[in-house]
Every structure is written in structure tokens, then in C-alpha cells.
Image (cartoon, rainbow, N blue to C red; front, top):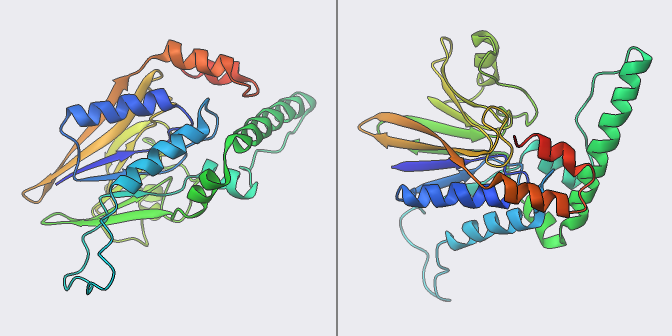
Length: 271
């Protein structure tokens, strides 16, 4: 069984299409998870939401004819699942991440710049969405899970289970990382959020914690669309963290041509 996991698209449709084309070239996947942050801070927020929604809709099982009795066997797990990330929540309810309070005049000036830029970009993104786009985000849950035969339970989340803003990073101490996963059962946890790929076996708790990186705004490999492919076979899992080059010049041109506030600040993160 092959599971594909994509996260943190951030309105970058060019990168998303590059990742999806790479997955198709690999032969596709039996199941696909999207772990959130679809729209914010990118040139095409609505188009990215609509692309993911189309993939979800295409994977829905056909509706049985009216009057036909329900199947006697339990339904198979969904082939495609999508959950919400922190920036999706910001768009839904106007919440914002906490910032460290300023302790002097220079830090205060910095803080004002950060807040102004962040809020202007999020407000612009929200203005690009239709109610249907917004409603898609509203209906998303916060976690994925599956039982891989012979392997065990696998969970998917945006940042950590129960918290879409926490930082489970390559250098997070094992004890803290294990605490993040303490109230879940499983052998493999898969996340996004930090925009950095990671594959760690924790010395506590028996977990393997993997981060698939960011499709649309990678921090460790700018200009590459990152995602993960997990192949379960004979009671084991093979993890393939993918990084696919996409047309950064074309995406930068989209950003520059958009009315996204401070688009040059986003463009700088792509190189």
C-alpha cells in the first residue's frame, strides 16, 4: 500500500502541479493525504483550494442508486483525505499567531512591520476566496489516521496532534517530541507546518516522526515542491521524501503580477 502526503501548498499552484505530476510519474498512490495550509501567502489561493477539492471529489465513492440497500461490508477508508492547518484557521476565524512582545523601540518597529505585513497578506488571501472555498476549509478536520496491515497505526496532523502551531523539528529534544505524541497510539506520525523535511526515530515512545516539508514554500530546499511517499509492505514502511524542482521564475512572475501585499517578501523566500 502506498500513501502520498502533501502539506503547506500556500497558494503555489505551480509547485502543487509539479508535485502531483511527480506522483503520477511514480505510478500514483493508493491513498493521499493533504495536511493543510492550502492558500495563505501565495499568488493563487482559491485555485489551490479548488485543485485539492477536485482531487477529493474525484475520489468519492459513487452514490448507490435510490432504494438500493446499503452494502453489508464496512466502507473502505477514504482514498483522499484533507485536514486543516494553522493558516487555514487564520482565514476561517481571523485568529493570528502569537508574537513575542517587543522590549525596545527597535523591536517595536519590527513588530509593527511583521503584524502589518502578515495581516495585509492574510486579508488579501481571504478576499480572493469565494464562500465555497471558505466553506471547504471550514469543513476540514484536524487529523488523519489509517491502519496499515502488518505495520500498525499511522497518524497525520499539521504540526502535532491537537495543536496546529507547535514545532516538532529535527532538533526538538526526544523527550519533548515524544510528549507531543503521548496521547496517540501508533508507530508513525506524519506532519507538515515547519516547511522542512525530517525523518526521525524517537528514542522514547516508539514513534517514527516524519515531516514531508512544504509543497509551495520550502525553507530547507527553496524552489522545490516537497512531499512524501510511504510504501507499506511486509510489515515495514519505506519513506521517500520527494523534492521536485518547479518553475520558480514563472511563480515569481505570478506573485509580482498579483496584488498580494509585499509580494517581494514572498518571492525572496523562493530562492
